[in-house]
Image (cartoon, rainbow, N blue to C red; front, side):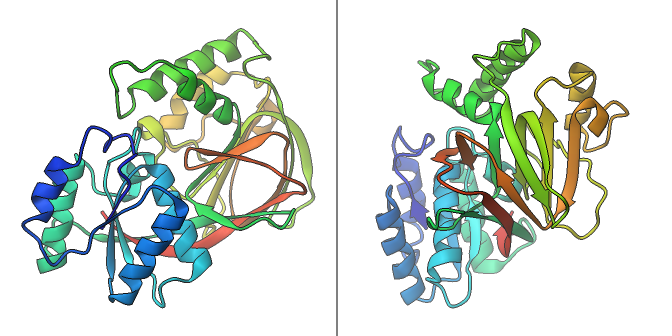
Length: 312
């Protein structure tokens, strides 16, 4: 088990987690909050033949682990991953992890490891591989976003959260602020994103967008499913929305139902495809599982990696 003590759900203490672990002395447990520490922890697990890694941390911790497993080849055979809802928002565990509190999820995962009962199942899921044109290291994750998505994350981190709320309350408030800015056409708060995309080797297309997102998750925040691509057997879901789309507020309800709205057409500024790879040229920054990164020089190449096996 790998714990990030700095994740949103762990900042108030790990007493209950350690009480559970005290009943399972055979479990190898390491705490780490830096990439170096996580590398050491995963190497230790690999050397000891670990086949299931429980991640007690936020989405950024999961993203770091996925990157290390894919890039560093620490394990000869990738381990099973069990994700606990221990972050501030925990978008990834809500889709490919164990729902409920971190303590409940930990107990379930440990019981499954001992008896492989039917309370949990294994789910293979591809992940994203993000490669930068400037030669910087490859990163892996499950949700890529740019444009207003990054602006929303910045607003989220600037926001005051005196109650220490976790879950989806603060993201919901941030989303409402972003929608209001879009409605008012406040380009200072939601500046257009110049996008040049090349999907699966097709001719490149240039647009001004509100946002671009690419994901392997079935559901995002609030159960959102903003995908309506029709291509079969393509692991990545790609969606972009134009800077000034038509009928935006008529399309929004369909984003929660994974079905195409009759207004969600390219002519109205809504594009969604299932793809294998995209070459993307954008300016500014991007987010990978909630963490913000600078673009650097050259286009990004985003493709599928994995699959990774999740216990959920």
